[in-house]
Length: 467
Image (cartoon, rainbow, N blue to C red; front, side):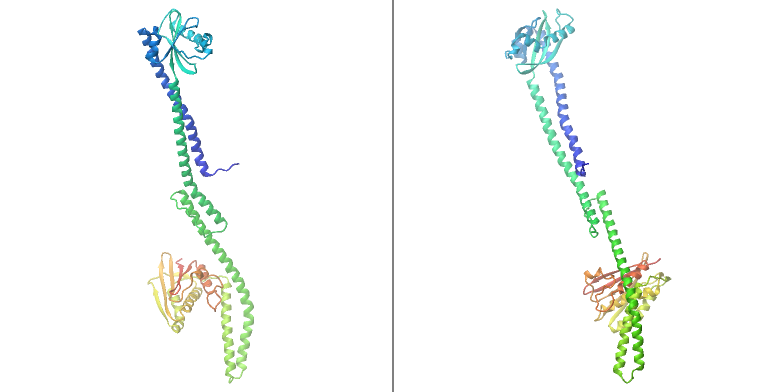
């Protein structure tokens, strides 16, 4: 089955309609013109014929010809030509039998007798016929005159035929111009309608191919524009869903790896810790160098144990103990633990907590751990000191906490990967800190986002719902 484009479906009906109009209109116009002019022509010539009879010009054929620019022919009752002003006849027309047949005299006689009532009666009744003599068209007006003869007034039709042809060609030319204009306008209208649709189709094909970061460029203020906007919104939602699915798969994979990794490391790590502690107790206390080495070993074991604990926390299924309570005390408790660290790095702490913040439901331990991870990252971003600003404000449906530092900042290309498991820009650490922050916030049906400018600092915004 042949497939037509929308543009063709729009243009073709108009073209077909105007093609029919282009053909039909000249024909109808010409026929109407011929009919109306024929009526006028007949009335006018009939008037001439009445004048010719009344004035006696009927006996002077040449005078009639000069006065009215017509030809006159008179036939006898036996159809023989008695008189004629028409000198140019075809060879076959010069034979009276053929001429009488061409002039339809027998048919005319019957019509005139029916009108006049008898062959002896002269009257004003006449009939008309179209004939061609000498290759020229005439309209013939027949009148019965005594004794039973036929008076024929032949009026040339060449000018009328030429006028009909001129009118027909003029109408046809106008029709062609109109059809061309309609075709052009229809094409422009069709293209104006179909171009956005083509753009939309190309966009959906790219989306189907997985290019969810694209947007449809259709900006028309109509239904197609609304459809494009709906497609753009749908694509954004698809991209967000895909990103969340990918992130969930990554987190699940990272969780399984972390659990396996932590389990395999923790057992030998416990043995190493116990052996080091036994050696410290058995080694000669005076051997300070040995004692220092063992303390260093224990410190590194504790550091590794902290990493393993972080891995296990990341892999452990979420179990929240949400309690409706004020948020600021939990934040201040974390900041109290960080006071020495902040002072050591010469970082000024600015607290901007709005008054009368509502109580919200949250798991204290998990949220404090997430908040501590963010603060530690901010401290590490300011090795030469700076300002750490902690703020909390009420929003329409929750509380927003922002941790802003004046540190080194984060390059734009790294911002999108900050919350990926095991992604880190530091030489130390597992890269699970912000991943855990994101997970904790999402477990609370909240969200976290980061804005940063290299050389100016970073702001981490955390939002928690009020219910």
